[in-house]
Structure formats: structure tokens, C-alpha cells
Image 1 (cartoon, rainbow, N blue to C red):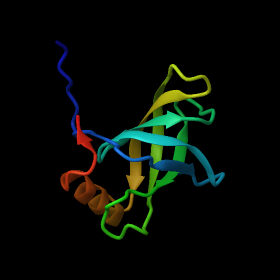
Image 2 (cartoon, rainbow, N blue to C red; image 1 turned 30 degrees about the horizontal axis):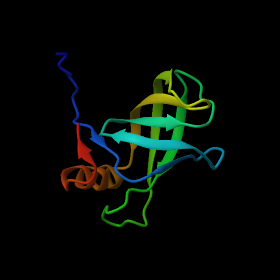
Image 3 (tube, rainbow, N blue to C red; image 1 turned 180 degrees about the horizontal axis):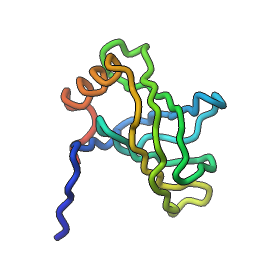
Length: 116
């Protein structure tokens, strides 16, 4: 059995959460899991590995639900899924407003999503 060593605990996303590239204002995929330091995206748009992105998403059940979370993110890796046109894409967050980080932490701690 392989043990996982991550600094931040991840939560699987239970309901569809679309992720928008704010530079192009287009949906690039859906969240698969999320932590306060990064996310796994099921990407439906072509992405550049090692690229920097400005992304936006809304978490249901989060405080100030109408406030989207915007992050600067670094695409660390990509891998094909079993569905043509989709990739697993691992991002590390590099910038986020403190208020949005607090919103994300509250969402993660409140039991939304499934603990991984």
C-alpha cells in the first residue's frame, strides 16, 4: 500500500464545478479535487504544461457563495483520461487573495466534498 505525503488535505468535489480561464473567459474544465494549495482539474481545453494560469471557480455551499474564487495557478503535470479530449491536470496555487483563501478553508473544513 502506497502512502501519500501531501502538505494539504484534498477533498473530492461532489457536484460539478466549472473552472474558467479568466484571461480568455472560457471554461477549461471541471474540478475533480481541491486543497488550499492546489487542485486536480479534468481539463476539456488544451493546456500548456508548466504554464501559468489565472483561474476562477465557484464553490457551492461556501460562505458568500456568489463570490468566485480567483487563483493564479501553475500547471505542474497532465495525463490523459479514458475519455478522448480530456486530461487530468494538476495545478499548484501561487496567488490568491486572503479573503478567498479563508473562504476556501471554510469550505474545506465544513465537510463539503469527500475527504481523500
